[in-house]
Image (cartoon, rainbow, N blue to C red; front, side, top):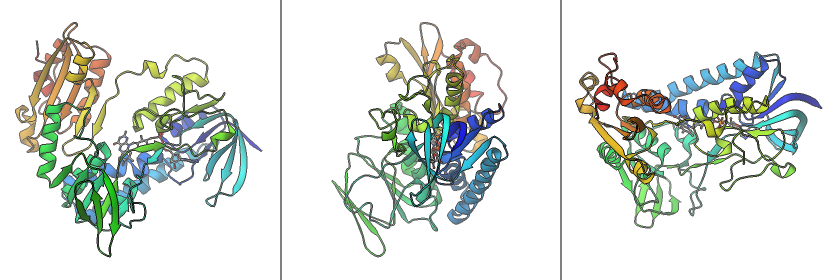
Length: 440
Ligand SMILES: Cc1cc2nc3c(=O)[nH]c(=O)nc-3n(C[C@H](O)[C@H](O)[C@H](O)COP(=O)(O)OP(=O)(O)OC[C@H]3O[C@@H](n4cnc5c(N)ncnc54)[C@H](O)[C@@H]3O)c2cc1C
């Protein structure tokens, strides 16, 4: 049996970087990938392709041309990712499905599920990501008009009417993109309202802008059934029937744990995630998990950051753990984007903070004239007690960049006064921080 120091299950975000770094440290590593998704979800079917088409839709590129460009970008990155590991003498890439035979043995299966080999690892790292959840509505799985986020980015032509089941962040990104390309979009959401975790005033700006793009939001709806005829599908909810030529299912993603875990001591958590402690150690000795599969926030940078915890745990240092993780920002790449870090005012009050709030319309920032885009609202939440930032919600152009600066301001408790008087380049969206932080 071939032996390795580490076997990494899945060519995911954290695992691939960890593999490269550790191979250069002299470790023998196996990376097992079942779908030829070299570079994982993000590069092949997630962040990168969805942002290519999002940007193209804003530039009013033709849908077909955008899908072609997206395919070229993905192919180039996939190839680069493969080579980046393959070039290392210490790394062996296996194109197989991985399943546990025991806590330290991995069965390699071919695409028909046939066992082709078994490999042994001193340490096993589970980095298998997550996959879309498909609901159980009658006829949904059988409909030829139904797509997940991967399928919808491979369409040959723009649908006339896209119905999206689920009103979460991936759903809203696709709604914004497809509407920008010119499709009519209907979003069906189970809850009474959308973006429940976000600041209400910001949400009302977002929904107003999205509605102007020909996106219709139907809340408090359950999808009951889907029926096809030759040219259309009919989505029946508890309140109406919608005719559509494409249905995107985007109700969330579940951890990929189809790994024959019954042959191990690895346990699952309440939401089907691989259970780990704060050092990413699973309940089986020498088996670790990182990225989406371990539950929590599903972002590329979370998985990549997990590898620092993993390395510390493996080398016995344990100086960095999930508990030491500072604020985690995120961006919803609608047009314009919403970016968020820390608490909203409502959350801060619920936690007992005495706060100050400040908001600034994007239309008050000089840069908006150059961009010819007045949409958006920036808001910050300050802890009155020590005059430090505890939250920010930025809806507007370039927020996906600025939010990373705000994360640093929160994490390193930079006084509000310092940002108010700091020098920023002009004309930029970031210089708006002078006004936004002019709060006391
Ligand atoms: C449409 C979409 C848009 C997104 N946009 C963003 C964004 O803008 N920013 C952001 O940060 N995140 C975004 N994400 C989320 C991001 O892609 C994930 O959080 C990230 O890829 C998770 O990385 P990971 O390391 O957990 O594993 P992944 O990158 O998911 O990789 C896991 C790999 O394991 C493989 N695998 C699974 N099971 C097995 C098995 N049994 N044997 C062998 N291999 C296996 C899979 O094929 C996959 O290649 C988006 C996701 C989607 C779907």
